[in-house]
Length: 223
Image (cartoon, rainbow, N blue to C red; front, side, top):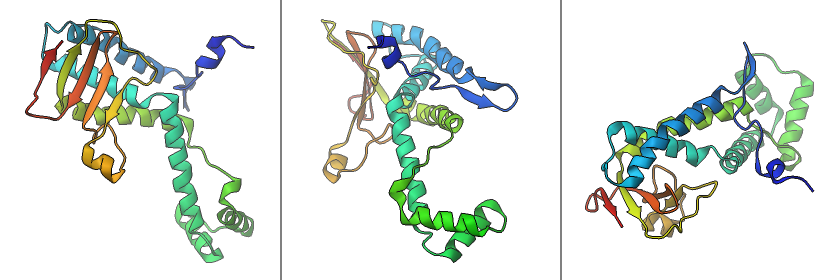
């Protein structure tokens, strides 16, 4: 048996490699700063007395929510699976020697040798025998990029604060809940931070934040 700390914590999830300094925790510090900036803003929002939130508070919370939605191990695994699938789709199209040679010339700006041509043809014929994983540092930077792209969309949504009389909300490791639009649900299409009908997020055990785009509802505190 092992201690829960050893199975519940993913080590070095945000450690990146810098050619000049080696492995660095700079991204972890950035995420920690985002958490710190959002903390006071969330407390003011949960109180409900300073509503709607100021532009600075709205930005801090939007960045924090954007990071929460993409920085967990589950999302990382999804992105890795997508990258693997896209790579295999590209390789599957290289079904003859000339296509492989043309691909290598275009991708690496050099003439391919016979061994690597044979190897790539074998890969194209047996996609299940191998898998690819994106560069770890690049995946970490993708997390930051996704949060920066998402934040403006979250800020443009209307924000509602729901206050409950009892502390019944659960603060999970993946607290951002995406509510799909009915039309998208019927068409069985995906739902993301930019396309969801609503985003639900517990701020504490008694307070939830709802981000939506219903102009008739607007922004309000309810309880």
